[in-house]
Length: 210
Image: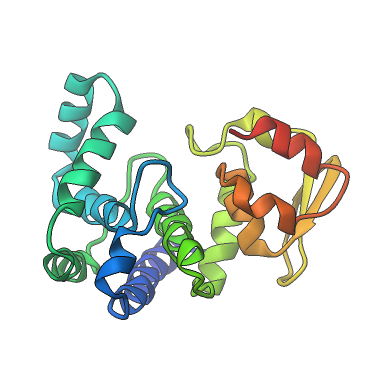
């Protein structure tokens, strides 16, 4: 996908997620997501905060905290502590914002929102509402070994991935086959998706996760 198309897909996926969030009851906002220690509201807090806080300020505060992930988690829970209506309004306001980290570009925020959409939907028993072309682009990104920490290269080395529900495959080696969404979750360290995959490479992928 071209850069403009990737930005369009990011905005569309955010709007798809907003549609899901608009239908949640108060108790559902407090359900544990697929992200360890994050409730649904905290995942939304993460997605809103990375758009709301200027990139330079976010980076500087991450350096002061000595960990990007730790600072991002603190901010996610801070934003997530808001009333769901206020948090959703904030995310809706920011949904069209075009943000992309240097070098990686818009595929990074696209992959982020795709994965986090399922971090929210799966524990709530909701079907996947993922941008189809965006999903393919995210799979290409995550299987390419250049994700700068999101998917360590050693996790996917020696594996061939084949989606069973869309025309997509990548890599060489032992086979990991299954739904595209499950492959994306598995390679981004969501073991909950591993039982949905088959092939000689699944055990190897599972041993590299966690």
